[in-house]
Image (cartoon, rainbow, N blue to C red; front, side):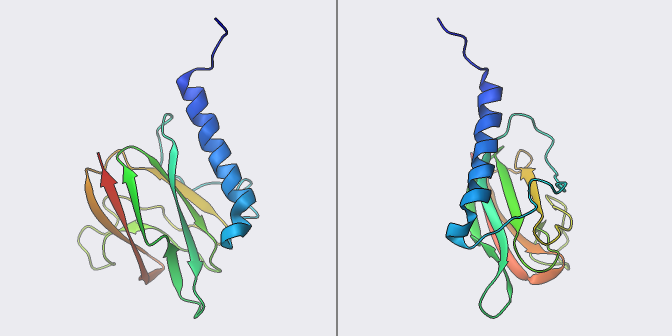
Length: 149
């Protein structure tokens, strides 16, 4: 029987290929992360076995308002989210409905992601449910993560 790579190696390779495909194929959805690979991530991830299961892009609409695309994502508990900032200004993904929310930043917070930068986080600490988020540098930009078992 031939030697097969371990499950962790396959998972890491699939995550890497997913991100590379996203960066290379980004023009299809209007994304350009010219420095994503060379930029240091402001990652809140500490898991070695997670796979990138969702991508959130921070961008601007026709009126130059900061928006999250998609605005709502569905993810399974423990999966990793890749966030790319394609807007012209620093942004974040911070849990809560806004800065006045008592839970603001308590469940997850990417910290500030510079323009053309990226961050990742794993949803291992989130129980099934819906989690609103906003950008700490632009609180009118809002979205939601729906975590399932």
